[in-house]
Image 1 (cartoon, helix red, strand yellow):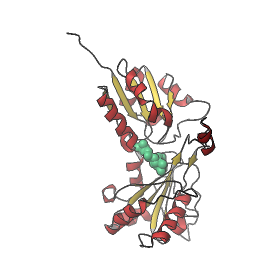
Image 2 (image 1 turned 90 degrees about the vertical axis):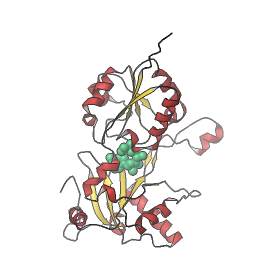
Image 3 (image 1 turned 135 degrees about the vertical axis):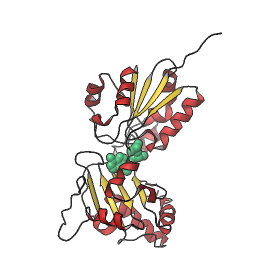
Image 4 (image 1 turned 60 degrees about the vertical axis):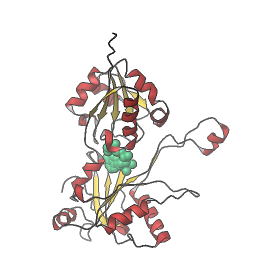
Length: 292
Ligand SMILES: C[S@@+](CC[C@H](N)C(=O)[O-])C[C@H]1O[C@@H](n2cnc3c(N)ncnc32)[C@H](O)[C@@H]1O
């Protein structure tokens, strides 16, 4: 009887900061893989991902890395999986592989195609937000805030935030990333051209949240609701600022990526920790860099 040995798909978390955040286990796996893909869709990296290539990562890993953009992840993933049937293939993900739903799909498809999968975990935005002192086990459902357009203003996040707040739970709001979005014009013409990448800022997210509150009027939150804004978590220049929606709306958080937490009912220890990140009249220039 013929013995079929399937090779492995390694899904490897890179963490949040820079190329050195990969784990030793992850690095070992990358080194033994014949092909290495990096997902550039659900997160932007501060890892030297630019038009001139992925040099920092490639230097550290000692091999070329193929950029798996949104199109490849969503439409051509079967090709990657087929390759993993004949050789070891690495699929690198910023943060943790399960910090985004796309990668759960990838595992399901791999299993269906009888490709073995090995996951190497790393830090995710989902746990890095713990740095502000709000307890991770006091969070409700995470919501995603999409960019509003003139004609498309989806607000299903509102009900979820309302539910979380009624239960006294904190809410993590993940903010939209628009990468490789085909322009409307190019879709009509049938030849794809792409919009420039866009990353939602905390300021835009708060504007949209308040617009939706005004529309529904159920007082799920308001301008005086306490929040924490996070930018570039895990990087040297990360920024964490606590304040009301009104206060955070005017803070310049700088480069992406950003996310926002709407604070629920707090424990005294959570309050004590949040104090370190607060904008105050004595400290209007709160930069919120790192651990206080
Ligand atoms: C779908 S999640 C991807 C999560 C990633 N796979 C992980 O495990 O961290 C993407 C969203 O998380 C937030 N995010 C990701 N990395 C971040 C960072 N370093 N700092 C702040 N927010 C971040 C942004 O709102 C971004 O739109």
